[in-house]
Amino acid sequence: MKEKVILAYSGGLDTTAIIPWLKENFDYEVICVCADCGQGNELDGLEERARLCGASKLYIEDITDDFCDNYVVPCVQAHAVYEDKYLLGTSMARPAIAKRLVEIARKEGASAICHGATGKGNDQIRFELGIKALAPDLKIIAPWRNDKWTLSSREEEIEYCKQHGIDLPFSADNSYSRDRNIWHISHEGLELEDPASEPNYDHLLVLGVSPEKAPDEGEYVTMTFEKGVPTSVNGEKMKVSDIIRTLNELGGKHGIGIIDIVENRVVGMKSRGVYETPGGTILYEAHQQLEELILDRDTYALKLDMGNKFAQIVYEGKWFTPLREAVQAFIESTQQYVTGEVKFKLYKGNIIKAGTTSPYSLYNESIASFTTGDLYDHHDANGFINLFGLSSKVRAMKMQSVKESN
Image (tube, rainbow, N blue to C red; front, side, top):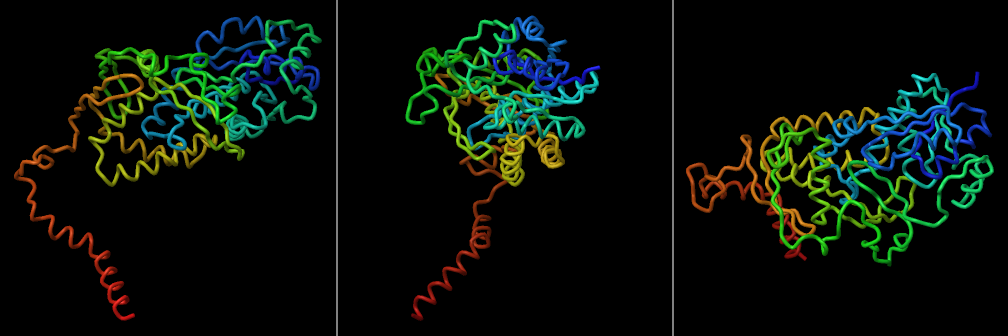
């Protein structure tokens, strides 16, 4: 009986060419697994394509709700943003996919898992760290790092497929390299490879329009959260995945969440990409709008640091680690009272506050108002400032005496 290999299958040219390559070079029985993270019609026709290419079986696993509930929500609660801009759309999906690959490998009794990530990117790290953490006994095959993989262009991959009786409507034309799920879509390649070039947004955008082409009239949106988890949009209760879908439509319509960034990959190189994250950008902003009303100053400050750390952990593929669990435990402890309603207006790429309420708000109008209230005595600030600035004053006095003595 042949050994089985689980192939992370997208249906694209790379993973399609990998099927006959695995059979030819390793004599494996190839079982394809496509993880549906909400990427939409990209899944159409995959089963026929996989079988045509020689796979014995194709699993199409809908992990959208698992992805949203167990990977997206912790990142939202942490306000995890890599290098101040990237909302981790690809990064947080990879551990969810790796987990399902391992589960099916166990179910099928497979001895190896194969992925189509290149040797230049972050995904090879994210997939393999996840697999090693969950199934250290399984072999990992990465064709792009294997000496037996000699295909270096789309034309060569297409020709290889034809030589193996696979004639599919793939085009040799260059196009953007994209990754899509329910949270975002990323774009790399073509004019984006030159940082001096402006993105061709009319040709590039998929989930929405540019701010310039958004409606001239803004749109108000209301959201509710319970313990840091979004629960409704405009009065309609729904699960997290449906909230993201709804916000994607609203955000895309108003040009929200389009970023052009040069990021530092884990492997050391800089990479430019354009990311569309309309719903995610709204969700992050709405959560933070509520949180700033509720968290005390010290907790809020430390949470900012932990959010940056959480983003780094996720970006580097270290989801299945004690460190991620520990940081997430802290983040979750801060969310106990993050409950309330947020209102904002979407207008030409902007998310404009329009009011926030919470039964746990620490905002006290009697203290914060310019009108003096009973809870705050201006005279109390005298002693506080004297003590708070004492070290600065002592140093200034010393520097003054040193200067005078010279």
